[in-house]
Length: 163
Ligand code: ZN
Image 1: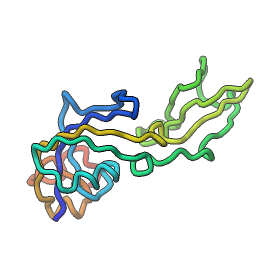
Image 2: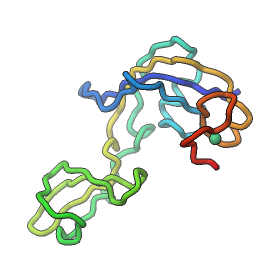
Image 3: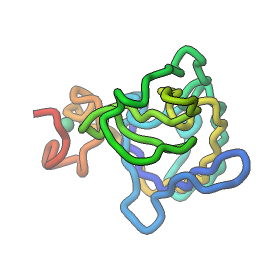
Image 4: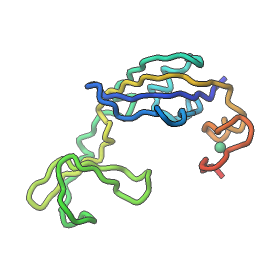
């Protein structure tokens, strides 16, 4: 049986800095084994029941991957599609869509810029403090769509993107 799991989380890096959290909003729901959340977290929550609080550490290779030096590219500053000052650590999206990759300015040398297309969390071991809110059995429709719906009844709902 594959489950729909709803949970709250706070994500920290190894220094303890909070990177992301669902606190104050709705819990996150996902279908187990569907790639909706990072693999390492999905695997470690397989047997967790509603009400369970746990701390899950996911090594980088099971989260956003190890850093790939080949993903760092040198481009001419003049080719970047915006004006203004750049500094190391600046991040921007390479296209208009939320899914477009984010690149990070890794270096600036004269009229060239080093852009790092690794995920900002590549190479980072992640720690999640998780609280399982609800679990239920996935419906046949959810299994065929490969994702969680807001409720077992009522189909995809808005924002699902599978119609
Ligand atoms: Zn759906």
